[in-house]
Image (tube, rainbow, N blue to C red):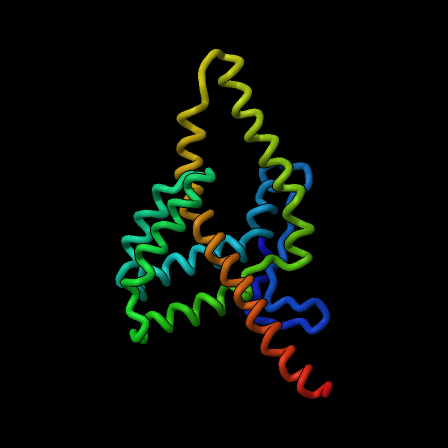
Length: 193
């Protein structure tokens, strides 16, 4: 049960920008699995918002989204994603205001989409139960002599888009870190001299 939601209430001590307070039945497996989604909400939600921004602000957004929907979790898919981005990148109108709005908003969202320490503590127990459930769902068809390939392919297809945007978000986080680190180090070295 959700007790309190605060989307923007900065905390100097923890660095959190907002929070969700909730209570749950510790005996309920379903509610324990829900803790994973509550803890991962900033990452999942941030990736989904970047997904929507891509569609809204870039003319090639629909083409990229169509490519992302065909990506499966594999090494070949990573190269397909890289190839698609390299083919689409030259066609992006860099002089377009909408492109730069997309880049700015993507950086803002990505730099604040990491789960807080409290989120991470709460989500691991739920994550373990989700893994256990997935293992059981794979063992049952095997014991019955059936295959779970169809289910696995469906899950793989469904997570392809989320994984693609999570990788994009991770790329933006690393880029943001490098830019901020570099910009903050320049004055430090100038003042040190």
